[in-house]
Image 1 (cartoon, rainbow, N blue to C red):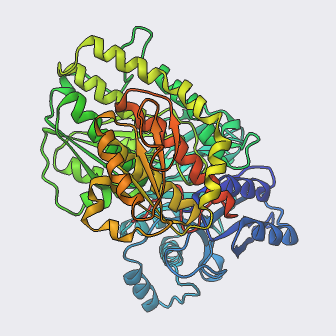
Image 2: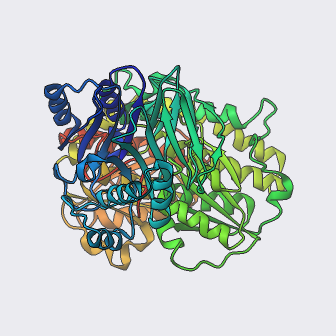
Length: 610
């Protein structure tokens, strides 16, 4: 959940490190720090609790002049948020200085062993233990690669580590396991980061490290090593992202910018996966007819908003392809001892491709021999590399912690998979396929129509600024949409909200409804229209303040309470439209409450620890 940056070259390191950390602020953090090697060789560590601006003030006062260093933004896992626990950490005498993302699961045992060897500790972190462990092995051998190799063998858990050795100027050493590490090169300079946006300003040529690999960065380039310390070569990847995609582009927040980008990224996704003849093509992903016919059940596994994509996809895939679909939260799937075989397709959905529980679920599925498919946004991420097949969404970099455009692209990709599967299995005729594809192609235009009325949702949001509880209700696909709507509100506005299948209200939840309780209904499914109207009327008669998002053409909801509409579309695709007003409402409630929309408390973009 943290950010790592590093640089070695001939330019002032502090400027590059601080700029990189700023680009990673979206990941969530509670302290920040840098370590810079002075020209005479000494390593200076500067760190501070709180926002990056606090660190910048200290750096301006100290003004370190070195041209190599590492930096970190920390989200507390071991020990409270304070200056001592902030990264970078150092060993006794500053022989080894390092930063770390991940969790060292056996840090208590390692700490006890190191204590027996005479080490003392100034922080509560697992990272300091890791740095001292590397120091111990380095003192034993005097060889940096050997020290990392032995430390790697002793450590249980996840890590992306960037290390400076006091007697090895001009070098940064790194190793990773289950936590992202990306290295970049450009004309006598080398860079490292935990995510691509920190590198784009300086280079577009990057390497993605795999688990158990190590590397050393210098002005001469990057040398990679396998887990045994043998030199290896990695493939250089060129990043095509537009740098402007990582900037706000005139919007007040990244989240609002990314909401407004959805028509463009959905259009791009459609162009990418649907050819001019109307055929769905998952280029390079090996989604062949033989593959589709090789499984008879689908398991969708994900976390957070990606899990909600799975909930929608279950309805769509079962309806179109008539194949059973299970949806699991990754942290539950991996521990429930799932029953899998080569006839079960496991689909892992993750924006970052580094989500720890989803990665563990993927590995469990592979262990049991089930074929795996990854739906991810980040090229070269761990889940993408380890899955049997991968489809990359075309969302581009998403900076705000609360996902919007990545969710929409994931949803569209899953819709296309459902259609492609239905065609291959002969469950749908060509006329219906083209009808549904035509409706999918209308989504960008209809999203634009919704976004043109964004001020309406700003006005609606004003009614909820002082509410502390809110309920979302729907049926079928609308219930799945409510799950995401509720999450969006709670994660950025801190309003307690819950999503319920409307038919469940009578089974206990309706007892929570009293005078003025806000209830938001979503009604886009004609076959369930009468049912959801009845449910909303039930809560209205008990005093609820009802507001309903209705698809054009469905009548009778204005008699129950306030309504707003979305353009008519085939009900199977309605969630792609209904999510946009819900995103806008959550955004404007958060803004109206004076909160930091892009960096909600306690949350981070990429959840790389359990």
